[in-house]
Amino acid sequence: MRVAMIAACPFPWPRGTPVRIHRMAEALAGRGHDVQMVTYHIGEKLSPLPFAVHRIRDISGYTDCEPGPHLRKLLQLDPLLAMTLRRLLRSQSFDVIHAHHYEGLLTALAATAPKRRLPIIFDAHTLLASELPYYPIGVPRIAKEWIGSFLDEHLPRRADHVIAVSASIRSTLIAAGRVDERRISVIPNGVETAHFAASNSSPSPIRKGRRLAFAGNLAAYQGVDLLLQAFSIVRRQLDDVRLMILTDSDFAEYVPMAESLGIHASIDVLSPGYAKLPTYLHDADILLNPRPACDGIPQKLLNYMAAGRPIVSFAGSGKIIEHERTGLLAADGDVQSFADATLRLFSQPEFAARLGANARALATKDYGWARVAANVEAVYEGVLADYRTHGNA
Image (cartoon, rainbow, N blue to C red; front, side, top):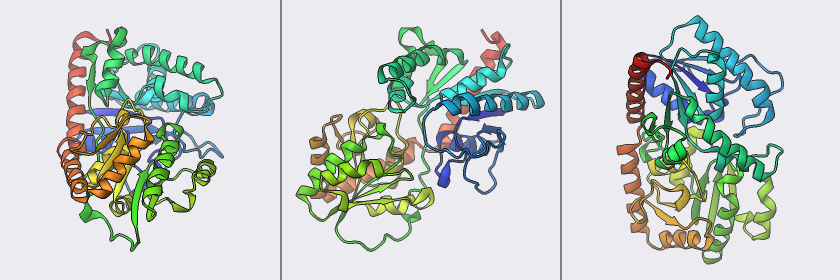
């Protein structure tokens, strides 16, 4: 099967951090499919990939790798992405188009207009109504919420099939007739379980005291402010505990808050990159996910599970965590509860170790990329069979 994939983002992601579309392309190529990626001009140069990459023309001075939409992407990069995809579709024959996130879907629709001849699969890993308000796009929050809801309602239904990463995204898109329930499947993210295994981790640096870790970007939706508040509570109980923030983002905007809470000197902001991330996760006693809400599955949570370390998460973004079996869940936004769960794991090391082992077992069983690719392949086959029978109905 020949698949044209659209990644409206830097590709590969800086410092080798894999995104869903990257690993899915690798896994599908590993199953014998001809995958060709259409993407931006920016991204870290990696060793040869098992699929072709087609980039938009270079845009002088543009190096922005931060997540989220902005006008230059929408008005310059995404039109170039649509033009690149259109040229590819004219020069080669494909079976399906796989569009990652909303910008990928917009690009696919633009490139195949006015008469679509290929089925479009929309890979939905979030909802805009909940995520768009966190991005600074120059309009009031209420306007961003309206725009997000409008796009959630009208864009996904334009695809021939939707792959949602979670049941909550599926149910929301089905509500009010947004997407026919027969045209939407749930296929969660995957994780590189071998990469995060303890045996694959370098020896931990020699250190004193206890350590917590958070890994990810520092966008507002991540709940970094809640993380700092909870850590300040833990720090008052355990004066030897430190917090590692593992990120490529700038921590500067959070420094005033950390200083006011009296915890700035107890925070280590590090940028290990994806290759070395397992070492730092294994060096932590407890891994923290302070995001209070997420329609999909945070990739960091799967990475944490694959690392086999005990996890504390807010319930809204920890839907795949079973409380007291694969991690501990705290009520959304309740920093005292989050801190109490963290303190509990410090006081019960055997229980904490059991949670970590259970989490790794679940990640290995249900969230490997080979399984994800097999499920995506089944969607392709079903959509193609329907498309050949009925066309773009």
